[in-house]
Image (cartoon, rainbow, N blue to C red; front, side, top):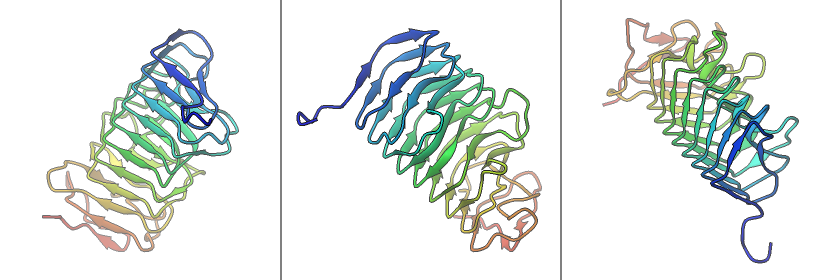
Length: 250
Protein backbone atom coordinates (compact mmCIF):
# COMPACT_ATOMS: atom_id res chain seq x y z
CA UNK A 1 0.00 0.00 0.00
CA UNK A 2 0.97 3.68 0.04
CA UNK A 3 2.65 3.31 3.44
CA UNK A 4 5.31 1.08 1.90
CA UNK A 5 4.67 -1.60 4.52
CA UNK A 6 4.25 -5.27 3.55
CA UNK A 7 0.77 -6.47 2.65
CA UNK A 8 0.86 -9.27 5.24
CA UNK A 9 3.17 -9.85 8.18
CA UNK A 10 3.12 -13.30 9.84
CA UNK A 11 5.71 -13.41 12.56
CA UNK A 12 6.66 -15.74 15.41
CA UNK A 13 3.36 -17.61 15.56
CA UNK A 14 2.97 -21.28 16.44
CA UNK A 15 0.41 -23.34 14.53
CA UNK A 16 -0.28 -27.00 15.28
CA UNK A 17 -2.59 -29.20 13.15
CA UNK A 18 -4.18 -26.36 11.22
CA UNK A 19 -4.38 -25.02 7.65
CA UNK A 20 -1.19 -23.46 6.28
CA UNK A 21 -0.01 -19.92 6.77
CA UNK A 22 -0.84 -18.43 3.38
CA UNK A 23 1.15 -15.66 1.70
CA UNK A 24 -1.44 -14.40 -0.78
CA UNK A 25 -0.52 -10.81 -1.59
CA UNK A 26 2.56 -9.10 -2.97
CA UNK A 27 5.20 -8.29 -0.41
CA UNK A 28 4.08 -10.60 2.39
CA UNK A 29 6.46 -11.48 5.21
CA UNK A 30 6.46 -14.81 7.06
CA UNK A 31 9.23 -14.69 9.65
CA UNK A 32 10.01 -16.92 12.61
CA UNK A 33 6.84 -19.02 12.59
CA UNK A 34 6.51 -22.67 13.66
CA UNK A 35 3.98 -24.79 11.76
CA UNK A 36 3.43 -28.47 12.57
CA UNK A 37 0.88 -31.03 11.44
CA UNK A 38 -0.71 -29.10 8.54
CA UNK A 39 -2.74 -31.29 6.16
CA UNK A 40 -1.18 -29.51 3.15
CA UNK A 41 1.68 -26.96 3.13
CA UNK A 42 3.01 -25.50 6.35
CA UNK A 43 3.47 -22.20 4.50
CA UNK A 44 1.84 -21.76 1.08
CA UNK A 45 2.46 -19.16 -1.62
CA UNK A 46 -0.66 -18.34 -3.62
CA UNK A 47 -1.54 -17.10 -7.12
CA UNK A 48 0.69 -14.44 -8.66
CA UNK A 49 2.33 -13.56 -5.37
CA UNK A 50 5.63 -11.70 -5.66
CA UNK A 51 8.35 -10.20 -3.49
CA UNK A 52 7.39 -12.34 -0.49
CA UNK A 53 9.97 -13.13 2.18
CA UNK A 54 9.70 -16.51 3.90
CA UNK A 55 12.46 -16.39 6.51
CA UNK A 56 13.51 -18.29 9.65
CA UNK A 57 10.40 -20.48 9.82
CA UNK A 58 10.15 -24.06 11.10
CA UNK A 59 7.80 -26.28 9.06
CA UNK A 60 8.03 -29.86 10.33
CA UNK A 61 5.68 -32.86 10.23
CA UNK A 62 3.33 -31.35 7.62
CA UNK A 63 2.39 -32.80 4.23
CA UNK A 64 4.77 -30.28 2.59
CA UNK A 65 6.98 -27.91 4.53
CA UNK A 66 6.88 -24.81 2.29
CA UNK A 67 5.09 -24.89 -1.04
CA UNK A 68 2.95 -23.25 -3.65
CA UNK A 69 -0.80 -23.70 -3.56
CA UNK A 70 -2.36 -26.14 -6.07
CA UNK A 71 -2.86 -24.75 -9.59
CA UNK A 72 -0.52 -21.85 -8.87
CA UNK A 73 0.11 -19.61 -11.86
CA UNK A 74 3.49 -18.08 -10.94
CA UNK A 75 5.36 -16.92 -7.86
CA UNK A 76 7.97 -14.27 -8.68
CA UNK A 77 10.95 -12.72 -6.89
CA UNK A 78 10.30 -14.41 -3.55
CA UNK A 79 13.01 -15.14 -0.98
CA UNK A 80 12.81 -18.45 0.91
CA UNK A 81 15.81 -18.52 3.24
CA UNK A 82 16.99 -19.73 6.65
CA UNK A 83 13.99 -22.04 7.12
CA UNK A 84 13.87 -25.56 8.55
CA UNK A 85 11.70 -28.19 6.83
CA UNK A 86 11.94 -31.62 8.48
CA UNK A 87 10.03 -34.90 8.44
CA UNK A 88 7.23 -33.81 6.09
CA UNK A 89 5.28 -36.63 4.45
CA UNK A 90 5.94 -35.36 0.91
CA UNK A 91 8.51 -32.75 -0.21
CA UNK A 92 10.37 -30.51 2.17
CA UNK A 93 9.84 -27.65 -0.31
CA UNK A 94 7.54 -27.95 -3.33
CA UNK A 95 7.58 -24.79 -5.46
CA UNK A 96 5.58 -24.94 -8.72
CA UNK A 97 6.04 -22.49 -10.53
CA UNK A 98 8.72 -20.25 -8.96
CA UNK A 99 10.83 -17.77 -10.94
CA UNK A 100 13.45 -15.08 -10.31
CA UNK A 101 13.70 -16.01 -6.64
CA UNK A 102 16.17 -17.21 -4.02
CA UNK A 103 16.17 -20.42 -1.97
CA UNK A 104 19.17 -20.12 0.32
CA UNK A 105 20.59 -21.43 3.60
CA UNK A 106 17.67 -23.70 4.47
CA UNK A 107 17.85 -26.96 6.43
CA UNK A 108 15.78 -29.57 4.60
CA UNK A 109 16.06 -32.91 6.37
CA UNK A 110 14.32 -36.27 6.58
CA UNK A 111 11.42 -35.60 4.20
CA UNK A 112 9.65 -38.54 2.55
CA UNK A 113 9.92 -37.27 -1.04
CA UNK A 114 12.48 -34.79 -2.41
CA UNK A 115 14.17 -32.21 -0.26
CA UNK A 116 13.66 -29.24 -2.62
CA UNK A 117 11.55 -29.60 -5.75
CA UNK A 118 10.03 -27.26 -8.33
CA UNK A 119 10.15 -25.44 -11.64
CA UNK A 120 12.76 -22.95 -10.50
CA UNK A 121 13.65 -20.82 -13.52
CA UNK A 122 16.22 -18.07 -12.99
CA UNK A 123 16.35 -18.95 -9.30
CA UNK A 124 19.40 -19.12 -7.03
CA UNK A 125 19.45 -22.29 -4.88
CA UNK A 126 22.50 -21.89 -2.67
CA UNK A 127 23.93 -22.95 0.67
CA UNK A 128 21.14 -25.37 1.57
CA UNK A 129 21.73 -28.32 3.90
CA UNK A 130 19.72 -31.11 2.27
CA UNK A 131 20.23 -34.38 4.14
CA UNK A 132 18.52 -37.74 4.60
CA UNK A 133 15.56 -37.11 2.30
CA UNK A 134 13.61 -39.53 0.05
CA UNK A 135 12.75 -41.69 3.05
CA UNK A 136 9.75 -43.16 1.19
CA UNK A 137 12.22 -45.31 -0.74
CA UNK A 138 10.92 -44.21 -4.17
CA UNK A 139 14.03 -43.99 -6.31
CA UNK A 140 12.80 -41.18 -8.59
CA UNK A 141 12.97 -38.54 -5.86
CA UNK A 142 16.22 -36.73 -5.05
CA UNK A 143 17.80 -34.18 -2.77
CA UNK A 144 17.05 -31.38 -5.25
CA UNK A 145 14.70 -32.20 -8.14
CA UNK A 146 13.87 -29.68 -10.84
CA UNK A 147 10.84 -29.46 -13.10
CA UNK A 148 10.61 -27.64 -16.43
CA UNK A 149 12.96 -24.68 -16.01
CA UNK A 150 15.89 -22.72 -17.38
CA UNK A 151 18.71 -20.65 -15.90
CA UNK A 152 18.57 -22.17 -12.42
CA UNK A 153 21.76 -21.70 -10.38
CA UNK A 154 22.37 -24.56 -7.93
CA UNK A 155 25.49 -23.69 -5.94
CA UNK A 156 27.31 -24.68 -2.76
CA UNK A 157 24.61 -27.01 -1.45
CA UNK A 158 25.35 -29.91 0.89
CA UNK A 159 23.23 -32.83 -0.40
CA UNK A 160 23.94 -36.10 1.38
CA UNK A 161 22.38 -39.41 2.43
CA UNK A 162 19.31 -39.25 0.19
CA UNK A 163 17.69 -42.62 -0.41
CA UNK A 164 17.70 -42.06 -4.18
CA UNK A 165 19.75 -42.54 -7.33
CA UNK A 166 20.54 -38.84 -7.74
CA UNK A 167 21.47 -35.96 -5.48
CA UNK A 168 20.31 -33.50 -8.15
CA UNK A 169 18.16 -34.40 -11.16
CA UNK A 170 14.93 -33.50 -12.97
CA UNK A 171 11.35 -34.64 -12.48
CA UNK A 172 10.60 -37.58 -14.82
CA UNK A 173 8.15 -36.50 -17.51
CA UNK A 174 8.17 -32.89 -16.30
CA UNK A 175 11.83 -32.12 -16.67
CA UNK A 176 13.65 -30.53 -19.58
CA UNK A 177 16.07 -28.64 -17.38
CA UNK A 178 18.19 -26.43 -19.64
CA UNK A 179 20.84 -23.70 -19.53
CA UNK A 180 21.27 -24.18 -15.78
CA UNK A 181 24.40 -24.23 -13.61
CA UNK A 182 25.32 -26.81 -10.96
CA UNK A 183 28.43 -25.50 -9.23
CA UNK A 184 30.47 -26.73 -6.29
CA UNK A 185 27.81 -28.83 -4.59
CA UNK A 186 28.85 -31.54 -2.11
CA UNK A 187 27.03 -34.80 -2.88
CA UNK A 188 27.39 -38.52 -2.35
CA UNK A 189 25.01 -39.42 -5.19
CA UNK A 190 24.98 -38.55 -8.87
CA UNK A 191 24.32 -35.14 -10.39
CA UNK A 192 22.66 -35.64 -13.76
CA UNK A 193 19.78 -37.01 -15.77
CA UNK A 194 18.98 -33.62 -17.34
CA UNK A 195 17.20 -33.72 -20.69
CA UNK A 196 17.66 -30.14 -21.91
CA UNK A 197 20.67 -28.50 -23.58
CA UNK A 198 23.26 -26.09 -22.25
CA UNK A 199 23.59 -27.21 -18.63
CA UNK A 200 26.91 -26.72 -16.81
CA UNK A 201 28.28 -28.87 -13.98
CA UNK A 202 31.37 -27.58 -12.17
CA UNK A 203 33.01 -29.43 -9.26
CA UNK A 204 35.97 -27.80 -7.53
CA UNK A 205 38.80 -30.12 -6.44
CA UNK A 206 37.97 -29.81 -2.73
CA UNK A 207 34.49 -31.30 -3.24
CA UNK A 208 33.85 -35.04 -3.12
CA UNK A 209 30.92 -35.11 -5.50
CA UNK A 210 29.78 -37.84 -7.89
CA UNK A 211 28.78 -37.50 -11.54
CA UNK A 212 26.55 -40.15 -13.04
CA UNK A 213 28.22 -42.51 -15.49
CA UNK A 214 24.86 -43.77 -16.80
CA UNK A 215 23.22 -40.59 -18.03
CA UNK A 216 25.53 -37.92 -16.66
CA UNK A 217 24.29 -34.67 -18.10
CA UNK A 218 23.27 -36.33 -21.33
CA UNK A 219 19.88 -36.54 -23.00
CA UNK A 220 19.23 -40.13 -22.02
CA UNK A 221 21.72 -41.98 -24.20
CA UNK A 222 22.22 -38.95 -26.46
CA UNK A 223 25.01 -36.38 -26.04
CA UNK A 224 24.09 -33.15 -24.31
CA UNK A 225 24.07 -30.29 -26.76
CA UNK A 226 26.23 -27.33 -25.77
CA UNK A 227 26.86 -28.58 -22.23
CA UNK A 228 29.94 -28.27 -20.07
CA UNK A 229 31.33 -30.48 -17.31
CA UNK A 230 34.33 -29.49 -15.21
CA UNK A 231 35.62 -31.22 -12.10
CA UNK A 232 37.14 -34.32 -10.51
CA UNK A 233 35.47 -37.71 -10.75
CA UNK A 234 35.09 -39.89 -7.66
CA UNK A 235 35.02 -43.64 -7.21
CA UNK A 236 36.29 -44.83 -10.59
CA UNK A 237 33.46 -43.22 -12.55
CA UNK A 238 34.24 -42.69 -16.23
CA UNK A 239 35.46 -39.24 -17.18
CA UNK A 240 33.52 -39.28 -20.45
CA UNK A 241 29.85 -38.23 -20.59
CA UNK A 242 28.27 -38.19 -24.02
CA UNK A 243 30.42 -35.79 -26.01
CA UNK A 244 32.14 -34.29 -22.96
CA UNK A 245 35.17 -35.11 -20.84
CA UNK A 246 35.45 -33.99 -17.21
CA UNK A 247 38.33 -31.65 -16.40
CA UNK A 248 39.68 -30.76 -12.96
CA UNK A 249 39.70 -27.05 -12.06
CA UNK A 250 42.82 -25.79 -10.28
